[in-house]
Image 1: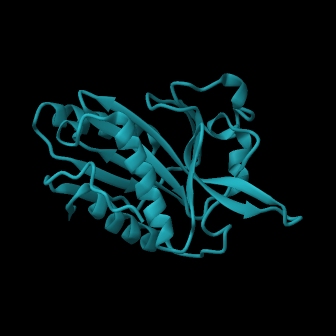
Image 2: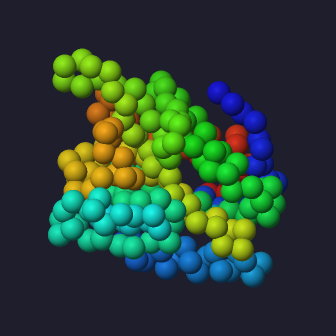
Length: 227
């Protein structure tokens, strides 16, 4: 495991977890307000863990032909990078509102650290995961019903930067309904599937995932204070 602290900051990041599902527009409005306050020096860094009701989001690179079932769930256009993504119960969403002015002003390095954060977290549960050339997100090797080797996406990333403050972030599939991904071409990639921790036989709770995520965040990004 790479424990390099390339984006380490001495700032203590507020760590908040919402227990009830948060509607997507509400979450975006709250992020926007917090990012604006950070840019003005009125708020500190914040990580927000939550779940959403079932929905699809369209990133800035979304292709409308990738929305296969437009009437299945609500569809929201969003300012994050990337294409179509599913969010829903059983999926841990992490929104990272971090001050990149104190973390090197390097967006590419920041995205790679988020990917590494997810890989570290999954590794806590014995899941070997990694990046794939030309594909954003975190991937695992698995097998299909015929025992053929295949690759599947277990976590997605989509970030936005405003005045060197980051927002949006990651989603990790703990135990979502994987059929819900069939209404889109996830992240524009049709030749590979989607999986989850439970689908891989790792039957952990959301709380266990959260604890591992916090530990990995502290190693890579610095100290936190639970809100």
